[in-house]
Image (cartoon, rainbow, N blue to C red):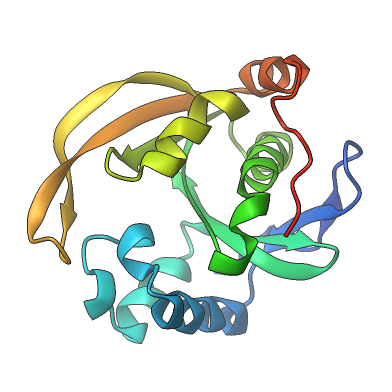
Length: 192
């Protein structure tokens, strides 16, 4: 099955950002980049540094998922795995990551990517499941418009730490993202 989402679209808010479906080659390059920078354990904690390329490609290139490229001035700076939360749903689960050198762009990237997904994918809400130990993302969620619903003990297995971690459950809608944008300084400019 061919993924129906193609082509980069630009949000009118900031023409520097665009998003599109990643190619298989970009998915493979992202694997190598995350492994080289040592950030795979945070993005894919179940297998972490033991994640094989075959496992990675099976997840990222699954026809049920939408691997979204984050492009800043045309350069791939991060991505997200978006997939339906459950059968027959308009809620899409998201799993974003930024490459280490582009961490300072994370706040704006995740907000733009979330808004783009709600405007262009077949969903009306986005569900986030974030390891509580990922404090940087946990603090970012409310700033970009994700409403924290609660915590689920033992939601994530961390291969690197050989233990389970609590997960933070959050949800975003177009209204909550717009509300966050309207807060003064919520998405201040950042630089790389």
